[in-house]
Length: 409
Image (cartoon, rainbow, N blue to C red; front, side, top):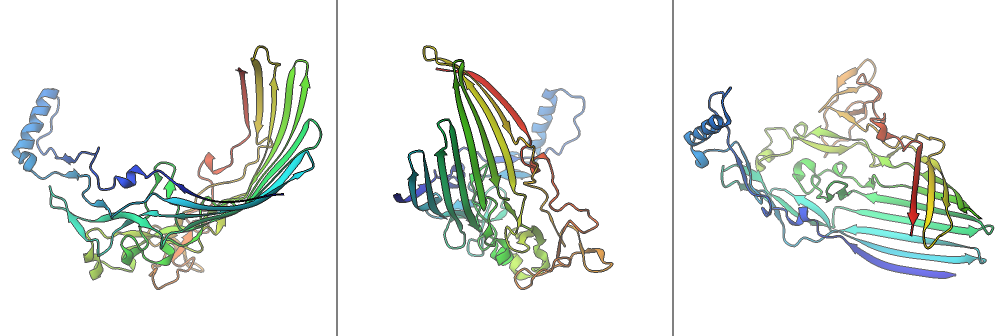
């Protein structure tokens, strides 16, 4: 038996979009001025440009008031030293041989994330004044947080492999895991991103628990199984390999979250609105536990047949034929998760009330009631759209054939 334990810390490269917050480097200021002269129809480009310049100068030129302004570093700044988010990982495991033909091992993995990027705007941060137009804007400070945000991954991984006969190999991997917290922290387009709202931005409007609750995050997957068998058959014309892979992935979570109007609990006459230049008109509310629903479990069977010729002076020709999802299973892995609130539609408020507008509520002091303060689209006159697929990407990849040929050298 072999035992192992390790501790690691993985630190990503400091995100340029975060470290460059408030910097105008590479982003020159932009001022846009509107043309207010007569229509220019059926004139040459030279005449049109001359007329536009004349109108620009007649309205004060560069000293005039632009209708659109973009100045780097105006309303977003770094707050002190910024750290790159990192992951602390601790693992322990054990493994042993099964005779001379196989092995089995298991590992426990604990990962805890830290130094999340956040954007802060509150009464203490104040506002800034745009130097060209004099326009005010709430100041945004980018920093790290380890107090309010969390993301924790725990898993048990087991794997085994055994050569049953000389040409038959069997193997399997199994993972049981949980991913919980209230921070996603990145996306596929931008990489690391900042977290706002909650207690960070406009806390008087967003600082309630259900704005950013802890629970199962979108990448959580309770069970993941891979089991395979392969058979090798050498012949005088080359080597053949036939393999079968069975896949199982338990469904990923999703939540019932929707936008609510902040004016329903902080009206326009409330003095707190005058503390900010641009208080948020809406905010996010999670109705129920985060990640309380699951998409379908995904199962699929893959088959592959590979052939390669004997090597001739270091060269051999090969052909691969693969069949993915052989039985064309069609589990739903995504869809409509929309929620109706007083902001956007109607609720089913009891007998004969289908179609009445959802009632407002105070997220700091009240508990919303389904059918009164909020409603999924299913069960209303709007139509049964909640959980319904929205595109082909809402389903697992259908049966897929793939062929490849080539030379190895």
